[in-house]
Structure formats: structure tokens, C-alpha cells
Length: 256
Image (cartoon, helix red, strand yellow):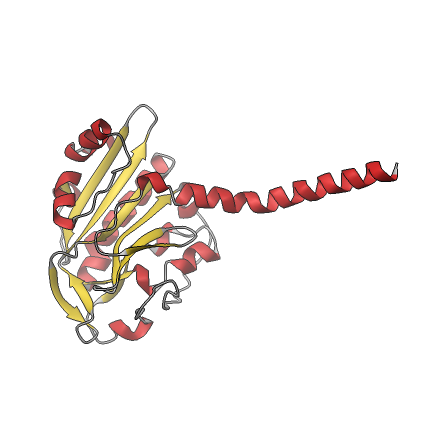
């Protein structure tokens, strides 16, 4: 009887450990889908809990940020933390929260805070300076914010989408912080959904300036974006699927 009780206690212990570790495994698999990660052109990969980025030390910002955007993340109750800070995973000369001071540019999120309201970790991670890029205030608080909001709408409608976003660093409009942080002239965003029956994606390129134009006017195909950035966005997909996905503009598959 004593041995039987020990066996039962051991089984309960294992079950308890499994319950505690499972969410971490799910988060890692769900949010850092390696098969969908873009290639690195200028940087090295940094993995955070809820998003992955490729950091360009020469430009002191990410060349892309990738994450899985779910309704749960959008509809979470976590308030903004505004805890801008250096990213300890940046190997050399990380950007400080004060490096944008007096520049005239916003510390523009690549992975938006509003996309990560799930919990304190998800929200706080968006305030690493490696997730920031110099954005014109009229752009960051205007048309770019409008696009971010539209992507959240799509993520809710489609029960989750994958997002890749970043600056186009092959074309810059100056620097800040004593010439060490590149000011991009334009930014891109790709939204991807695998519906099971087919794979659809939508890409945008926007100049780093205010605009009142309709979002559809900024749509491009992914082939064009790869030419501008030097990044391969869906290289792990079979060639026939990748070629179709990147050469076709799927505006009819998204609500406007």
C-alpha cells in the first residue's frame, strides 16, 4: 500500500509539472514559427517571448520584427507600461531610451504595444529599444497607426495572423543620435494567413511621413518588397507556393 501511494504521488507530481511547463512550450511554438521567419540581410536574430526580430547593429534598429498576432493578445487587459529600455540581448552598443531625445522623431514601435495586451511580459517586451525605429510623428500617430489598427481587425476576423514589419534600411533619410541611428525613409508590413485551403498575404510600403491616402494605395507585392530590402520573406515554403504568394496581391481576401 505504501509503494502504491508513492507511485500515485509521483504521478501527481509529473502531472503538475506538465501543467506548469506546457504554456511556455505553446508560446514558443506559436509565436516563433521558425518556418515563417524571414532571412536576415543586415542583422542577427533575437528571440523574445512574444516576438522575434533581426537586429542591424549598423543601423541600431531591427530590420524586421515577426510575431503571431492573436485575438487573445489584442483583447487582453494589460495596460501600457511605457518602460522604454535597452535590450540586453543586443550584443554591442544597445540603444538607450534617451537616444531619441531632441531628435524630432518618435520612438516608433515595430511590434505595437496595442498588439500585446495579453499580459505584463508581452506588453513590457514591446518597449525594448530594439523594437523602436525613428518615425515622423505625423506618420507614427497617423497613417501607420491606422494600418496597425486595421491589422488588429484582420487578426480578430481571421482568428490570428502572422505579421512581419520593419524599416527599409537600404534607403535612409538621415540619422539621429550623433549619426548612429538610421532614419528610414519608408517602412513595410506583411500580414499572412494560412487558411488551410490556401495561403494569403498582403504587403504594404509607406513613406515615413503623414498621409491621408487610403490604405489600399500602399499595397505592393512581396517580390517588390524583397527587391527593396534584400530580405527573403517566405523562403521555407515550397517554391510554387512561395512564388504565387509573393507575386500576387490579395486585396479581395481582406476586409476594408
